[in-house]
Image 1 (spheres, rainbow, N blue to C red):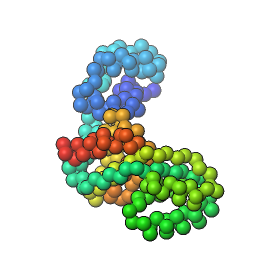
Image 2 (spheres, rainbow, N blue to C red; image 1 turned 45 degrees about the horizontal axis):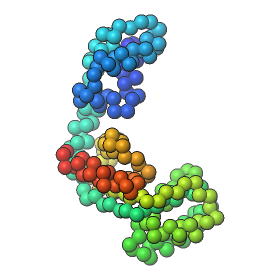
Image 3 (cartoon, one colour; image 1 turned 180 degrees about the horizontal axis):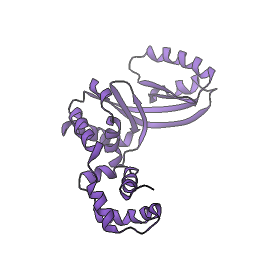
Amino acid sequence: MDSIGKITEDLINRSPFLREAITDNLINISALARKLKPEIESKMGKPIKEGAIVMTIKRMSPGLYHRLNIKITNMMSELGDFLVRSNLSDFTYENSESLKNAQTDFIQLLRKENDNFYTISQGLSETTFIVSASQNEIVKEFFKKEKLKAHSEKLASVTVKLPTVNTEIYGIYYYILKQLAWEGINIVQVVSTSNEFTIVVNQAEIDIAFKILMNLKRYA
């Protein structure tokens, strides 16, 4: 049977942001202990004193989060340029051979027009195209025989240039997405390469999302 310390730590680690909040002294430990007490007792199969849970939480070391937070915060100050794109749309189609063939012609067409934004993400069963809204009708025409699984309009994106060291530090995407989640920003799409990270959000939220990302760099 697991110890009270192991069970408590597992329960805390499964809740988004809770470990971080404890490390930053933002949590009422006694209130948290009362909330966890029934589930801990159920797993232990016996009554547990609230004070024992409180002591267990207080003895938890800052752990990996604290060490990672320092590395990531330092890296945030080295973020490169931010690029904002507005008036975007996304289309997600079910993968097929005909989609692959049409996709090749579609890319060739877009490359002839330098002002257009587009990105393509191909998964195991579906492919998503994110394009300038001016290309909506072209996309619909090119892929009219394909199965459309999802479509959104009035989107915008922020692309962040990451320092090359980002591939050596894990937790970076989590750190960025966490800040956006805390502010209630809904991420519609995420696109990344080795040294670029792009989030796609509803156009109405782009100003707030941009401000959050800028603050990550400014106050690092």
